Image 1 (tube, protein in one colour):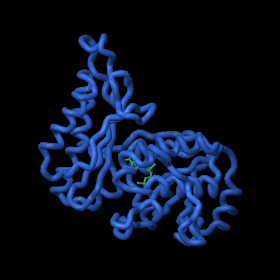
Image 2 (image 1 turned 60 degrees about the vertical axis):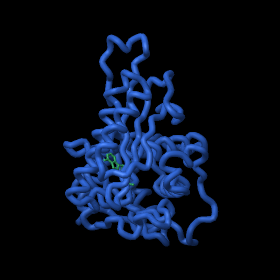
Image 3 (image 1 turned 135 degrees about the vertical axis):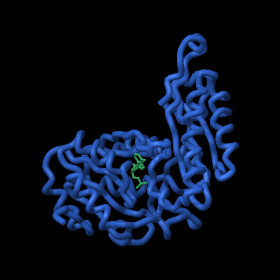
Length: 292
Ligand code: AMP
């Protein structure tokens, strides 16, 4: 294998210094799938050089979450990165990222960090933003790419970069899905056949909700809810429709919303979201819904 892999800060600094031109970073927790690869391909389009980070960040996992069983397959990940022409992989261990143990000083995600995912995973987004901040400092990219799959994370990273003046451009990448609509996720490897069937109802529900948006916010939520209620294998943590610009609950004034779901299927927790376009009430009788 000829791909360049940095395991330490020193190796990263030496290899980063060799990368000329515009540099993109794609941050991952490993167990790479076609969703991650899409980020890498977009990165190649927007930059001359691409860095991929592979780091399972303990700071963003709660005590009862799946940190210990999270899939890890570094050799396969490196082969995928090599096939995609990635210029540099940074795959540090915990003690490289956190040499003094869990950091005392962290990024605070703020109010949005306590809602939705944050309500069910307290401290999660502080952990995410802290490692994203560190990896941005260490890799010093011009542009960083994140998936819409983790829409709240993406929104918070944009806010951090804005509020704390990080000199980096953030590019978002649409969610890659299997044919049924199920969003690709490293956690899908936990799913049994029957889990998979239940998991597919998540995106079905979101599409039903988006398709009912011509009737307004309540109709969209009701349509999505009806699909989830009909699926006994799914335990919903939340189903929410927010204004895409503010992340406040969508109202009749919302034009572009985001319909979000988090649910447990067996022992696996999954999230997904879609864009929802509302037509104004004057247009409602004539326009077909534009569903993202
Ligand atoms: P993860 O390894 O799950 O932390 O994800 C690393 C990056 O890949 C994040 O920016 C995710 O939003 C993105 N990502 C994960 N799954 C998908 C997917 N199915 N489609 C597009 N991007 C994804």
